[in-house]
Image: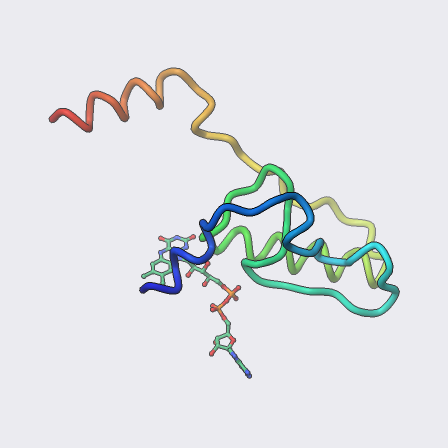
Amino acid sequence: MPYITSMFMPRAKGDRPLPVPKISKNLALISQFVEIPDDVVFTVEYSIRVAQMAVYELLGIDRKIPPILHHDDSLKVKFDAVVKAFL
Ligand SMILES: Cc1cc2nc3c(=O)[nH]c(=O)nc-3n(C[C@H](O)[C@H](O)[C@H](O)COP(=O)(O)OP(=O)(O)OC[C@H]3O[C@@H](n4cnc5c(N)ncnc54)[C@H](O)[C@@H]3O)c2cc1C
């Protein structure tokens, strides 16, 4: 369990590599410590999305990466969360 929090440690842009680093032609990186801008770590989706990005890019596969969903952007969800916190 303590390892879980390591994913949420503050980080600067560039601390974590992209799935396929800009200088790479045949090396890709996967899992939770790879950077996907705007995505949230600690989900199975994150690992899958990284793997898809790595494989599609290196093998030149023309398929869409599933979009990142920002459920928390809606006011309703935020309001529901506040209500839940006090129930
Ligand atoms: C308690 C808990 C609850 C969670 N709940 C959720 C949830 O509800 N929803 C959700 O989306 N996510 C959840 N997660 C997060 C999710 O499980 C992980 O983000 C996801 O499993 C990471 O997948 P991965 O394939 O990147 O890495 P992992 O699943 O960690 O796979 C890495 C694999 O590499 C193997 N490995 C490591 N070192 C070596 C080595 N040297 N040689 C060979 N093999 C090696 C490991 O044994 C492991 O099998 C939870 C995680 C935990 C711990």
